[in-house]
Image (cartoon, rainbow over all chains, first blue to last red; front, side):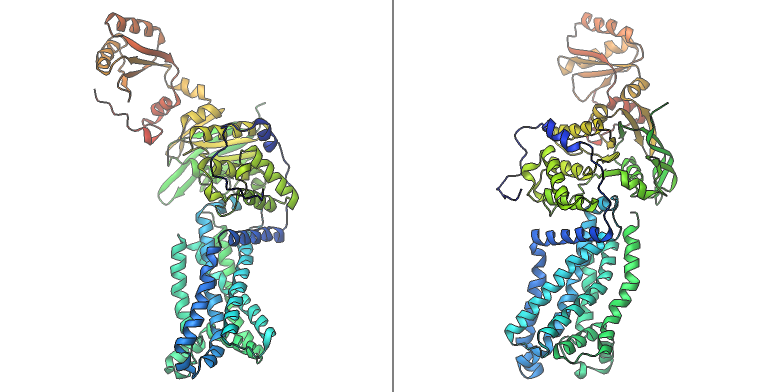
Length: 285
Length: 324
């Protein structure tokens, strides 16, 4: 089956199906033992991997956007904002890392919405499988996307001169934190994906939420120079807490309270939106 | 004893807003048969089927599928049924083989068994050559067959097919029919919805005709035909200008208004009593109106639908304009 002949998608010469083969194919087959939730979710994870394999274009944004942002901000504003591009990169890279992964969470909702609109979920829902497994399995694919995009950002950073003081360990801890954070806020986009009519709407609404959230934060500049009211906004922004925690992890100065503060939002969102998403998912249309 | 029922519904209702999409449907589907639900677009066929497949909750009435209540025992129903929806519910980005392997894995097949089962189905359904291609490059007929294959990885006791041949060319349609017939030979009950009267006629042992959310007739194809008028006389004259004189002769002889078909040389009459038909044909010969062909027989299901609902089953064939 693996030989990829350039088979044109036309029917075989004869119209009739071969009777013996057909009879064999429809001969009665008993159901195997019903698999558990983990097995179900793993199959959906496999599906997510296959989709990345067959539609690698979907990773284009994930790869190109962070490269663009890192290069552009560092060389355009770095000198003016921090005195030298190298110093600014040291400040900017953890922020870009957070921004990239947060933007990537949008795909959770868009992918889900696309799937649902194509009717394949009707099949999943009428099968005797563990209900949440399609959603959980899709998240396995998401983890791959989050990790992939953060690796790209870190590599670009290293190439341009970024040097994390806590070394490899700092980078790895940051990635774990990012995955947990993204998993948490991913539930918002899963919910949106289940609510909206078209993938386009999911995308638009997600951007409207995420753009101000990532820009009105400490991703690009130190809020010290901002007007007081904006400082208040930035300091209350959960994205700022995440970025601060990553900076500390990379620098080797992370504190438990800082990490807990960064994880408060995703924890809250999971508690509220995960059950909501499950209700929406089960709701008969 | 009658054979046990695969499906039994009583006054099944589904309301969308102010639209009573399904308005009190009673169905009794015997096990091991092909049962056709026939009706035009929007008649409530798909909604009925989705309720029976546990995808929609009924707003009223009751439905037993293989002895289980769809509202309260959905999981038990799901174990034994399979659904092939109107729009292909396979993953377009994956290959045919990957689609079947994924679903096999979800059903609990082990890796090797799942792959073997998938290949067997692809072989049987004439898809072996396309197994490694992404489904988005499949033709409509191939997609439909993959879709059905995906529904029978484990042979279900009851298979729902929602308009399985809509939009398919005749050859693909015949292939789907072959598959449906093979499945019932194996003991699976098949409930299919269709807009095509020919399809119901060819495949289904019993047919329910649905219009505006209600069952307006039920029975075997022959019973439905018999319930309408006794028989139908088709007459075809040699040229279009002879149709009007022929219609006059037939009207005089039989006292029945002939119906002008889309074909400008064809006339149709619903007869209550076939004995007068030969006399009417003789009168045409005496009036020197030669015939190309004539036939006397049971009405087609198209004519049955027309007689039952007052409108044709297939909106596409609305072009039967009569200009006399």
